[in-house]
Image 1: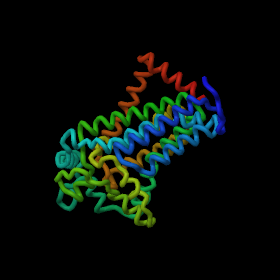
Image 2: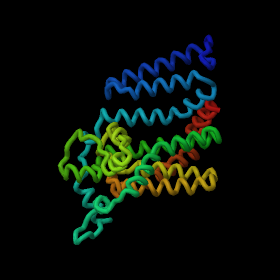
Image 3: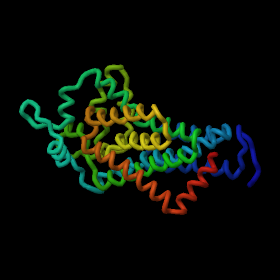
Image 4: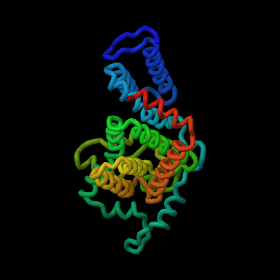
Length: 312
């Protein structure tokens, strides 16, 4: 095992060297692919702190490493824009949405996004912003709950979450798609390298005189990744595992958050209804695939068992 040293928790020199090597490699690769960002130092600092702080925090950060891997891959997508590999869908998706879900308003057929842009109000602006802020915190908080309650269910949820994201990423590259706000600001002309936009969520920022969503969307990996809406996928995964773990009244909260996120995705012009439906289908597909892998692929189940022992 090697000589052990203590920094809050006993650690072998080999383990320390592995963590150091991974940390340095991550910073170097990140700098090469997407350039230096303070977020990278924060992530490495947090990982090392929790790894060495105590046995509990070490198991916690090792368990959540699957989410870290997801985040790193998502960040690295900036280096490989999907519009370099396939045609971006703008007008066809807009017209498809109008054909399926168009609203006749003042004698003109418009998309639901355009309808809500004309008929929004302050209450919906505020509630929509609150719901959209639940996008990542709710799944992570739910994962933390499962980590301490049932490590097996925690891993099942975590791997399902990442699997759904990978399915979404694949579709992003096969079918690059512009969000509704892109049509509002740029029309049907494809402009590579377009920066993210808060769209309708700017009203939330303006109401509270804050730059919350501006900060979030300025760090987006690619604006041409509207189909499917992974914003809409995440609450489906949470709700599935919430029902599976019989969480009672918490299910009601998760249903409300899910519906709120779905509505806001359209209300704030970040996604078409078609994107939301695709996100729901993506989540259901990911859940089904995970369960098939768990039941029928022996080495996958064995891997999860070993992983579970390392965080118990």
